[in-house]
Length: 211
Image 1 (cartoon, rainbow, N blue to C red):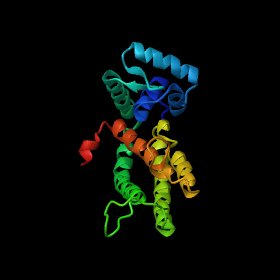
Image 2 (cartoon, helix red, strand yellow):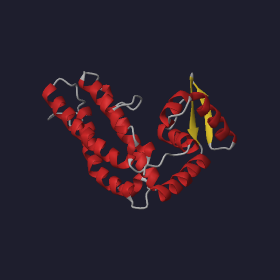
Image 3 (cartoon, helix red, strand yellow):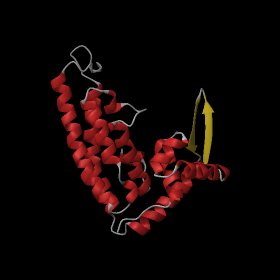
Image 4 (tube, helix red, strand yellow):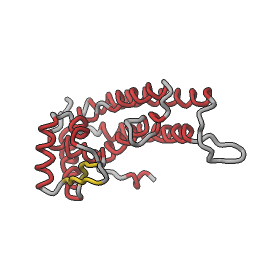
């Protein structure tokens, strides 16, 4: 049976996944009303778990070390209760080879090596090459949807990634190249990166352990 996470975990984890974001983004990410999310953020701030920073006309929320520790504690307790069969860990193992393919595809999207320059940027003049990369990203999106269906059967909060990825890919296919790899939009790469972080956090793993 799918487990639905408590609101405090959803919000704290949204802050972790976004890294630094305003309350509107965090409320949407956590699936909460903005007023409720803002109230909870201020409460978490009083507890020392999040901090609000403003600079250069930009402001947002981020986790403190205490907040990260609390997020990890809540995630661990949730996983023990929701996933005694280890399905999330099994999905993570299936995710890793797909992750390697995604990284290759993004690199190919960013670079188009020549004999003179192995790191020449992709100017997207070769439409056939770009189309092949987009087809690979589409295949990865289909695989992502299958993995997400398994994850969402355990934890409801692990749903939504496939739809976000598909929306970004659709924009990229329309000629908006930045929707493949930009880090400041909900691009294919950013959505994939956040899922990767979500899996690691949920399982109590680190990226360093993958190397």
